Structures are given as C-alpha cells and as structure tokens.
Length: 260
Ligand code: CO
Image (cartoon, rainbow, N blue to C red; front, side, top):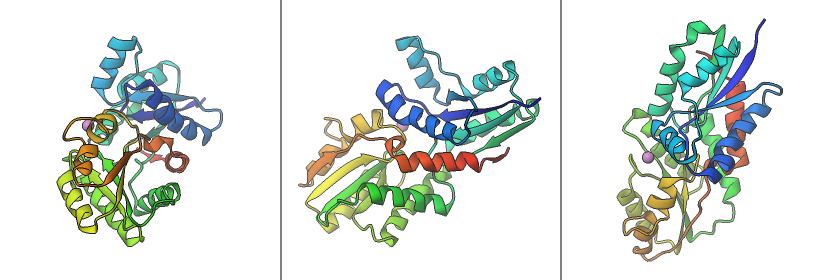
C-alpha cells in the first residue's frame, strides 16, 4: 500500500498575519495541485521555531521532525515543495535533511525553489509586471531581496538584468545581505532621478526585514535612505506569497517535483 503526503518547507515567520497570507497561502496553492493529499508544514529557521514555541506555545516541525511524523503515520511517498526563493543555504540544508531519510521512503520527490530556471525568472517578472502595471515613468520600484553569501546570490543581479532587458527600466532589485546592496542601488537610481520610489520586499513574507530594514523608522532604513535622496517614498508591505501568480509558480514546481 502506498500513501503519499506533501511537505511544504519554509524559512518561517513569527508574524501571524504574514504566516496566513504568505506561507499558508502557498501551502494551500501547492495542496490544490494534488487534491486529496495532506499537506504538512516545516520551517528551516530554528530561531523562528524557538520564538513561536516561547511566545505562542506553538510547535512547528523542523524538516527532520516532519519526516519522522510522516513515517510514524505510515506514509511511503513524499512530495516536498520549498517556499524558498533561491537555491541557497536554507534549500541546501533542506535537501541534506531529506537525503538522510531517502531510504526510509519509497520515494521522495522535491520541487524547485521559486527562482531556479531562467523560465522561472520570466514567470516572476510577468507576475510583477502585471501587479505593477500602473507604474509611471517617473516612479521607480525598488525591491528588497534578502541576499546571501551563497553563490545562489547571482539570482538577484540576474533578475535585475532580465527586468531591464524586458523593458522594465524603472524596476530595481537590491538586497539586504548580498549584491546588489543599497549603496549601489541608490547610486543607480540617482542617475535616473525619479520623482517617486516605491519599496517592496522580494521575500516570501513581509517580516522583520521588510518592516524594519525596509520600512522602519531607523535612520538607515531603506525608506529613510531614499527619502534623503529627495524622492517621495512609499512602502508596500506585501510578501511574494500574497501574489497569486507567485503561488501558482510554486504549485507548478510541486507538480514537476523530481526524485531526490
Ligand atoms: Co535575514
């Protein structure tokens, strides 16, 4: 007898509304690709898991705990879909955790993160272009990506390049912890002297980075940095999980999940 389950793996968030609007919403979209199959949740951030436990007494499984729970309940086959954006540190750690349990299941199939193939970049650009079609020539949209020391950081400049090549010359990609960084994006935007700058997270969830580093009141928040450049600045606190088209990319990746 075979019994198949779905595991949705996210970095995690401690904001209850962001959990529902982004992570839960992606889990639901992935689940709808496989009617009747149960979807379980795991987080990769130990820090978030500890915070939820301490604050709310809610226990979210790690990847390993989720695998154990599937085994305990007699599941033989798994489809695993990460809600990660890039094939970076979190995704590598997830793959390692899955590999350790590979022999305990008949099969484990794994879907790709949001931005893996060039066609994924295009799908995201199409989604963003539709969402921000109202942008005027003197309005610039600057996305805050996370960024990483992992080589997968190359996704961010590549996405920026594809946006420009696709004619979206007033959309920029910056990162908090990688390349391109804020000073570079500010310099590039300054050369084009827009009137308004709209800031939005290029992250699954509008969590701490979006609320504090991007839209916060600190001197060095992106909002204040761009205000000092003399633009009108507005912030959109909307995670990528809130975009229907993004959720559909994850569902498609789950349908195409490949054996581990
Ligand atoms: Co971070």
